[in-house]
Image 1: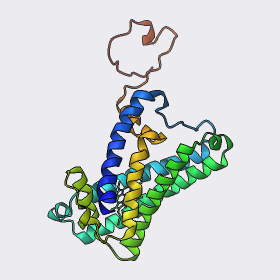
Image 2 (image 1 turned 30 degrees about the vertical axis):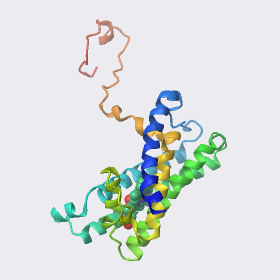
Image 3 (image 1 turned 135 degrees about the vertical axis):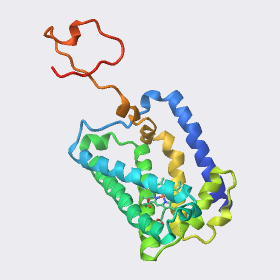
Image 4 (image 1 turned 120 degrees about the vertical axis):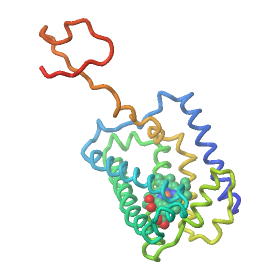
Length: 242
Ligand code: HEM
């Protein structure tokens, strides 16, 4: 069972993520979309979506810090376990709860807005269960194990196990005796990783990252005074006020 959960599951999930993403890109590029429902309802979306996405961005940052950076590195630069713990507890709880609240608003919107509910597939529902489950368990782990119960140093167990997977030195023994909430959370996380390429979540891989670097859209007048009457110069043109 230990081998199944802490070695086979992570590798299977990562393999499905890679192969599934390539398959989806090759066979379903037109379906590579969030299937936006903004046209049907935008009031709740304007609140829920940024809350969920910004919360999740900080949750991901927290996972990079907590799982990928070894404890002795942060100690070497003078960050004690106590200080790390406080940031991970308060910062993690705030980010996790923001993402969870955003998701609750989005799910409520989906249920309450007729056309949005009609456009919700079974695939979406399964994805919501795994995404919501991961978020809920993550918040429970942080708040209960790290907060109420007074601090469990997952950077001695869960984090080195997680790194071992990517270093091709998986060590399931590190997960012996961890609080069960951590175990459930990691299992839900990897199930979500496996489902990822087959859901709307693929839009995360093609978020408009290049938007921030694109040239400005330049509007030109048609009254004969603007640059539109000149031969268009090649390349970018300076934007001047007219
Ligand atoms: C893939 C394997 C994953 C592992 C090994 C993992 C591990 C962890 C750990 C160790 C914590 C810190 C708990 C604490 O502070 O004591 C945590 C927190 C959390 N996780 Fe994960 N996680 C995984 C995937 C996910 C996924 C896929 C999601 C959701 C999309 C998620 C959402 C959260 C949330 C919301 C928290 C609480 C806030 C925070 O500390 O960032 N996790 N996770």
